[in-house]
Image 1 (spheres, rainbow, N blue to C red):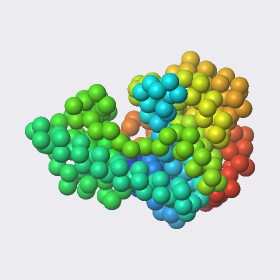
Image 2 (image 1 turned 90 degrees about the vertical axis):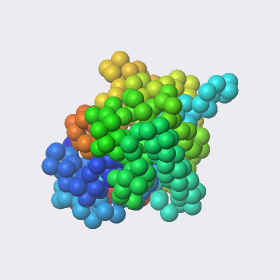
Image 3 (image 1 turned 30 degrees about the horizontal axis):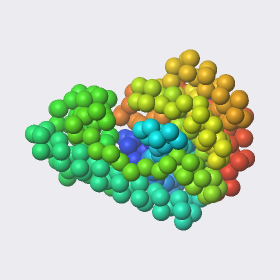
Length: 287
C-alpha cells in the first residue's frame, strides 16, 4: 500500500481543487491519501464525491499552533495534523472559524503593506486567487509571482513573506496543547507535522514533544521532505521512546511546491491501521 497522509488543496494553500487532488493521488499510484488543509475541513465533501475507485480518503486538517516554553522564552510556531475528527464538534468548529478569520485579516494586512511600499499587488487579486478558500500567505505569494516581483512561491517566502520581512504580520494560532486536546475531544488523532523542518525556522526540543504526548499527541510525522536523514532517525527514536506512531507524507501543495503527491515520505500500513483504530470522530472514505 502507498499511503500519503499530508496534502493540501485549493481549500487552503494548494493549487489543485479537492476533486482534482484525489484524481492526481490515484494516478500517482496512491492507495490512501489524507486531505489536510490548513484550519479547515471544507474540502472534504468535494474530495469524497470525486473519489476514484481504489483510493481511500482520510479526512483531516492541519492546525496552526504555537509552543509556549515554560521558561517564558519566545513561542515557536508549529503545526498539528488532526485526522478523522468530527467537524461538527463545537469547540473545534469555533477554533477553526477564529483561525480562518485571522488568516484572512493577516493576508490583507500583508498585502496592504506591500502595496504601500510600492510592490504591485492588490488585495482584490489575492482574494481572487484564493477563490473563496482559506486565504493565506501562499495566495499573496502567487500574486507576487503573477506580478513578476519574484519567480516562484518559494522566492516570495524567502524575500517578502517570512517573519524577518518588514511586511511580516503575526497570526493567531492555538497553544499546541489546546489544539491537541481539541483534536482528541472531537474524536480525532493528533500528529505533530514536520517537527524538525529546520529550513522553515525555529523548531522545538524533545521536551516540548514529551509535553504534547502528555495531552494526547499520537504520532510524529517523521518521513517528510523538509527533514534530513539524521533528524528523521532522531524522531524515530523519540517516537519509540514516547510510544508514538511514525507517519510520512509529501506535504503536497500542487504547483506551490515542487514535491509531487506520493513522491516523498510514505506511511507504513501498520501505522496507518493503528491511527484509524484510534479515531472515533469520523472514518476513512473508500472509493
